[in-house]
Length: 284
Image: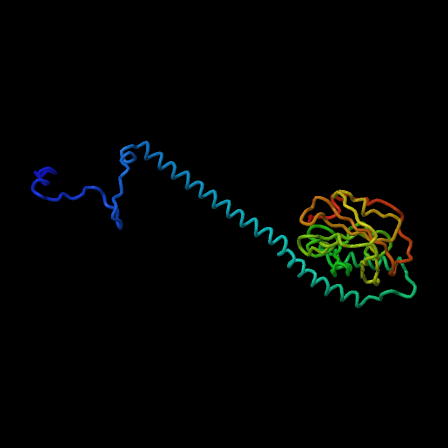
């Protein structure tokens, strides 16, 4: 048997028993403390499991963040395509009806014109769906949109909506119209830029009615009194405030200055009889 001492004495070389590190000239020490200690091995495996769990949670949170971001992008931009498509169809139908209408007779028959607008409303609400009832233009903020009959969440996805139980657009009394500021068409996004004297133009089968901006105020969502009759021929516009929020409502008041109903007596001041949860449905 050859030992280290005898090998050294006769000049023999004994191979190094330590494990070489493949690809490197230096030796890799073996952690005998872990290899020979079952408890240490368990701790090492447990630590590896914890890191795998942390990595999985991080991946899940990252994917949730991506989904949330995509939802926000759709809400702010994708919904506008929905409204744009609906507006194109509504405009075609509205232009066809107004072209056939006998606009502005020599001697206004307010009762007949109101009845005609009511008939338009009934047609627009046929089969539980909404349709075109008017066109609203606000040159100051570059708005030109078709107004639908109603202000439900579904209605306002198509464009501005005329509020139920207020005066029909362009007729005597207080006519209320609601629209979004951020999502879908965002028609009233710049409504806060209006100043006294700015015009709001409403076109119906009865003709063109011009209103002039009077004032604005910020109210709570349940302040439905803004849509009540106040004994004047006027227009009330409602939307969410601030932009990207539904915390409050921005209310715009405008006075009728010309149109088929300019000299018509307004309805007496009165509240809306039915219950309304909010003066604009859906938010933002």
